[in-house]
Image (cartoon, rainbow, N blue to C red; front, side):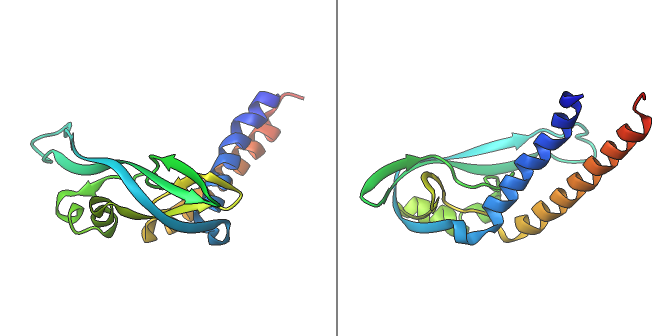
Length: 156
């Protein structure tokens, strides 16, 4: 019985934490950071139906950066809290502000005030906030529905 409740509550709790971290800007501060190393890579997504759709080519960056908070030095590889923000279209890769700053060697690092070890270079893209809210609402509605179905159909 507890496993059933946990199965529906755990995703809600994790997604709630993620939404709070992404959207609640007062939890975050920023500082300047230095890029230690980075690699620009290409990823090809093969189409299952080559006659209908071409392969999709995306670029992404792997980066390691260093920053200082209260005279303590931290390092991180985390670019974003978004689900898919690390992938760029080939055309937008070189014109993206984040990629430009990484290539220049100086980045703006956002870190969690209460736990400065958790940092990102970009908390969210503008369109991701709306997507996260929609996913969050849908997950809650589905979980409540499943719980109600379970309560109604549960053996007495």
